Image (cartoon, rainbow, N blue to C red; front, side):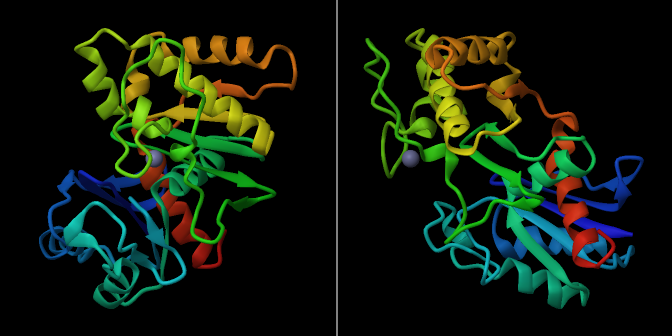
Length: 268
Ligand SMILES: [Zn+2]
């Protein structure tokens, strides 16, 4: 069996198994400090002895070094060598990728998502990953799809919440922005920015599908609103991708981490 860790900004979820039909999940483990959180993570894996472990982590992540980047707003985790910590504790090979790339890999392997496709999550923050030519999207660090700088919607006076850019996609349409906008009844702008963001990503990557998930997308009708607005903004210019929800529900990330472990162990 393999191990998967979805290392989220608010909670970690661990799993052992081989896929959706053979999966043992941990309960949610709060993301507090590496010392406290990792103790519970190791306690979950100890009786199971997985052959390899995959991790999908909140970011930014220095993938080459296997560390949480020093620029993360989660102060206790700055520079934390997450990959090495798991390798040393369990004595097995470990692969680290972003939370969104792990979720993309899960949807690709177990959810039938076609190549090329993107996975975008609109939750507390906004992020995206994807598969192109059979490979997860990497780069100098990794894509930061949530920080696209977009045309401001007419009449929108919301300043935005991103500490780096203020009014980037995440700053204008993340779960935190949605909560702040709720007071002023400006939620229709959220669909506008998500449509602008997804359309820009469609033009850059020409994906067959964009899976749009995350807590914000649990709002009834929002995905259809985004899809319709994309069609309007595109004005017939380029063929658009299908916009769907994640087929694996809330398990895309942890299942993807598991599948990355499988790949690492050489049975992909
Ligand atoms: Zn930003």
